[in-house]
Amino acid sequence: MKPSERRKARQLAVQALYSWQMSGNSIADVEHEFLTEQDTKGADLAYFRELLVGVSAQASELDAKLKPNLARLVDEVDQLELAILRLGAFELLHRNDVPYKVAINEAIELAKVFGAEESHKFVNGVLDKLAISINR
Image (cartoon, rainbow, N blue to C red; front, side, top):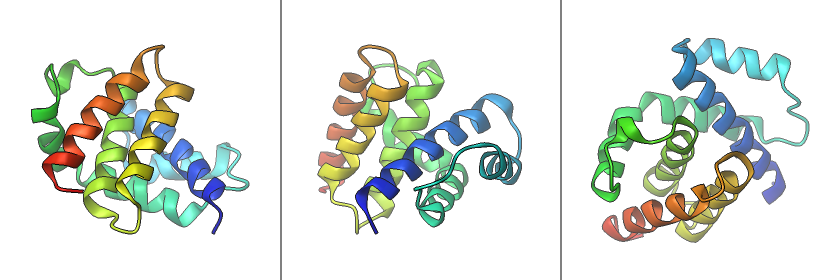
């Protein structure tokens, strides 16, 4: 498995999670839409699916873990940043095979690609605090 395949899976997952958060559609519908309409070549689709299903199923738990590390309410976080934070938190909490520095760095890279100009700094700060609080 190449790191680039996981990176592509994370990029697709963030876009799909954002779509799910904004549309309110079922995660199965969002997944189907992404697998049929997006360029998934070079992506680890099993990892994409795990991230999508895991984050959506545990969104409330992830939000609760993120909440003490935010300077604002979860509801006030930009939806794209929230998708990135949830994905990063999921990897920190549930993927022991992903080193915490990799999980944080990948989330920062996602914020640089998809987020606003300063998003990566916000994502870095929140996930750093979360990693410390869970001793990773």
